[in-house]
Image 1 (cartoon, rainbow, N blue to C red):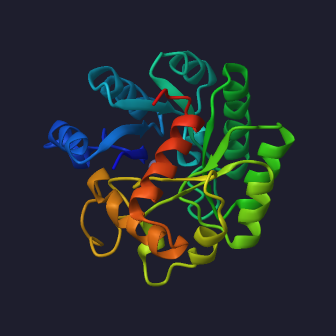
Image 2: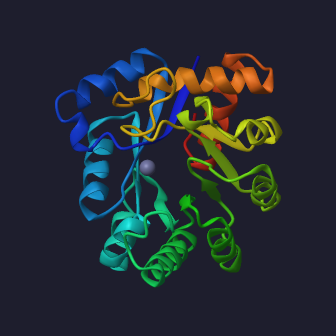
Length: 251
Ligand SMILES: [Zn+2]
């Protein structure tokens, strides 16, 4: 079974002691690719460093809405041209925590969408309690290659996203008892989704309360398999193929 981890933060301090061991172990468990996602200046540079060091790791660069007030367009444009950077993200809007003012979140989001379009890179969207604004801004800019990472909307919003030909990505949240995502997982077409852990956050059930790692992807695969009534192998394969296509990585 070939597995693609499309969203992890392995540069974070939670992995200080065993980062390299985990990356190596991933390969042993069939996790052939990992996208390490930047959220600010430091983590973008760290993501690129990891990608330079490990053949299986790719990087994504962007200023998270929490860090929108520090957004630096020239920095992102420059880092995005590194050969192992495969996407712009995670970028978007977070009205749940509002750690940056709404206006600066929107401005940073728009500027980064423009960079992605200029450089022909896909966009990894962070949307927390900001579904409609995220959607409208992306649609206004005519963004084509978009994934709603850690999808958290309902089925109605999912259909709007899918109508735009954008993608949905699922984390361990789908394994939680109070998850409202079952119908969305059921209706998403086989060619429009992939999987991620968002490590070190969001450990799937029954690993809740622990640090998350990409090695927990099988729990997410298992849950999708159960909901969509297809084999785990098929789930992993679909997600792998869709992610390769989305991030433009040759299999
Ligand atoms: Zn993330």
